[in-house]
Length: 262
Ligand SMILES: [Zn+2]
Ligand SMILES: [Zn+2]
Image 1 (cartoon, rainbow, N blue to C red):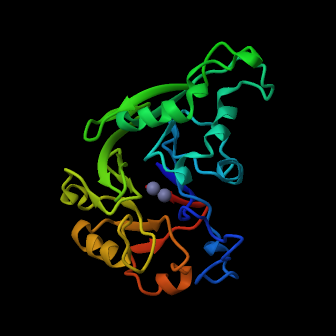
Image 2 (cartoon, protein in one colour; image 1 turned 30 degrees about the vertical axis):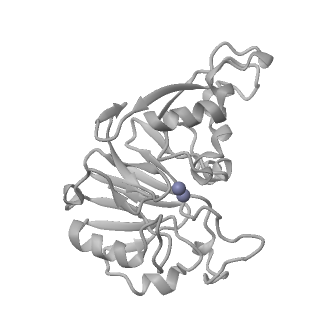
């Protein structure tokens, strides 16, 4: 399997026009972070997790020509608002008048209520350009109920994100992607023990009530002992070189465009 970190930034992205790079060194390109998403491929199935605002550029920069399915962790704007950029993958040609092939789209049953209200137009064909199918073929998923997308086995894990619940995903029992959480809900962290690759959201080196922060990530690292732990969703206090120097060798910070083979 190959995982691409398309974006590893916090909800505001780095830099911002107002505050620039914060405490991150602006001369290190690894500190320029678009909003968080990953792309997973085992050579047979190509899966996108989350559709952040910079999605078109993320996909272009990573050279991604195919997406078989899209899946969401939750409905916060930084994980969702680039949704329109996946519609190009439903077309056989660039013309908007081409017939679309609906893209399988997986989300938490609870999130679908919000999705319906925000994006009712994605659940019907775009009649004004004479399309006969809607862009998305929605599949509802539930925490702790495993399912398959092509050749990928997925386990959704319920997470506490302070203001809402989110989903993390364990994929093929080898990789876990857990972002936008402060804790797990009804899930024993010991079940991640020894995993090959753990990608964990860690927004800051200061405590936070919606996201895992560095001290907690280090504690969880001791419990889970993954072969490799990559921190993502990195905020403006998480300077790449400064934080990397404080981490054990199995633990590292993500950067946009990072590729990991497992
Ligand atoms: Zn987020
Ligand atoms: Zn969030």
